[in-house]
Image: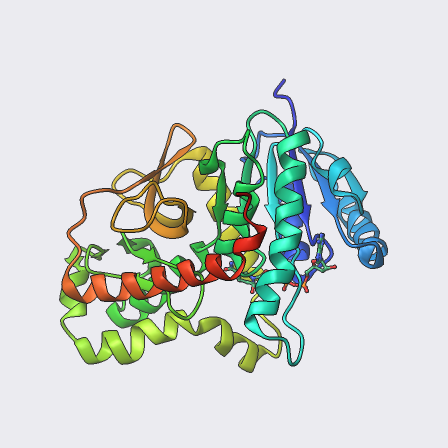
Length: 328
Ligand code: NAX
């Protein structure tokens, strides 16, 4: 029988963790035939909430859920892990500057990267969800010298899915008829959802992009500011959609992207598309043989270039702001 995969979820008692765990247990992430051992990592004050979540997981009687263990110690939670879903992060509090938020989280992810380096399984895959996700992933990778940098990724699949949803409304077609959308850059308001290479129910995405007023004043800002719109409308930040996108990301990484399509994920740049090496930047990607491959050779027009460059400049600024937490 298939040996169980070890999945560690940090911030497991938070909103995204709560929504993700039940779908992971049900097989949505790694497949319905893959047994899973769940490890929940929380801050000491939230351990009781995690224990309650574990009781509910128990009550799901999931066929492939082998065990659920709860930790407030990263070393124990990451020991031998195959998948690290790094969701837990320090939220921005009132009056906190962005630079302070970057620093506080950089410290968390530096430590988690170092611990993963010491104790994680041979075949570790990491997805950072906690914000600022791209830079947190870069910091974790920098503190894990023995793990290939490409194993550290950050979530921009939610932005990708949001772009598909908006385009499907515009085109009046179902989401499944839209392929080859690309999200470039940072998971922030500077991100660039690119439809120039998309296929939309048999038409080219570039046709829709010809309506520049819609593209610039509607589509791009709606996708990039969707998180804020959700907070304003729902009264709480995106949780189930973020959990769903996290599951999509790992699912496609392990089980492959569909033929003829690609998705978006933030990965350490190998120096392609003018993105400096090492910045964790969102690219169009395919998964082949359980490895992300950046879709190369796309023609980047002037409009796209300017927007990609702006988001990449923001990523470079973030890294500069936490520079003292990067190993020399
Ligand atoms: P919650 O505040 O509901 O949950 C976060 C949990 O993490 C808390 O239970 C907290 O105790 C725990 N935690 C904090 N520091 C920890 C640490 N060092 N080790 C272990 N656990 C720790 O937030 P939630 O709504 O679940 O969001 C989690 C993160 O996802 C936030 O940083 C949020 O900004 C980020 N998001 C990222 C998205 C993306 O697309 N990349 C979209 C959704 C979301 O905004």
